Image (tube, rainbow, N blue to C red; front, side, top):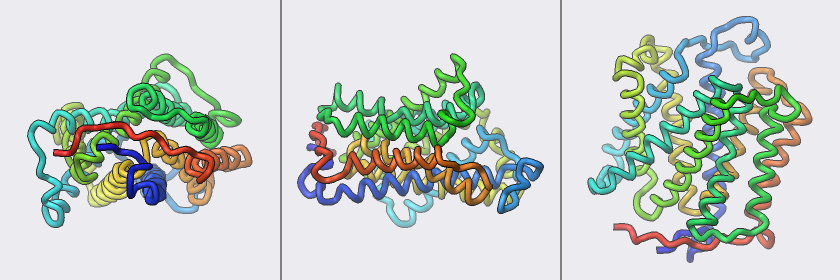
Length: 331
């Protein structure tokens, strides 16, 4: 069956895809800022903050494993209560979910953290948000996407906007190292894989099914990497950290990933990943309002470029709908 933003009954609802992708970007941004507030200790660097940090100390990699585990448990309970049908899949689909969970969910976070360890945050974010380039290339070469001038232009504008917002241009600059570049590009490929596999899953499974099984396999990855449940014990050591992990599992994992997967029912992966580049823009503005971080003219201009990219790829009479690509019928 064809899957495209211009499929019958879908073209008039494409706005839902853009809105859901923007919602995902919003919650990813808010999740990152919340984690920063929760897991930063008070000190000279936080004196300008408009809200005092909570100061729960958990290593980022342990937090990633703990939030995957918590999100999986919360989502399973929710689906058992309200949407049991979403848990029913054939065993032949499990390899797909395994790749989706390990590469698309766990892989992108692992590669991002590794990129930060070898470069800096600005470089890691910029490299991760090269994902629209990967998605566009794969979609055009292998999935029958029509290459119009709006899509590569939108991709270029969104990446340039991200570079300005995170300070890769006109700010702290890039920190280049071979390992950092490799891990950053890997995070872009993994995020692109998440988007493309999510689009592939759209006609086959509900977003809840894709997400719950993806989280299950992502949890297995993190448990193996961290040495079992004991590896995430620090994240559940005190009530404050338990509450923090639970909030992040829901607000920056379940809600945004489910929204993004649902967005792929209405718009193609290239457009969805371009909209997702709103994340650093939202995070930058919120960090300015909450933590007193710098958000000057350069960052503002970057945000305008990202918004221009989103307007360009969906503006009636300018953007051309993508060609549908064929996938086997859902079974």
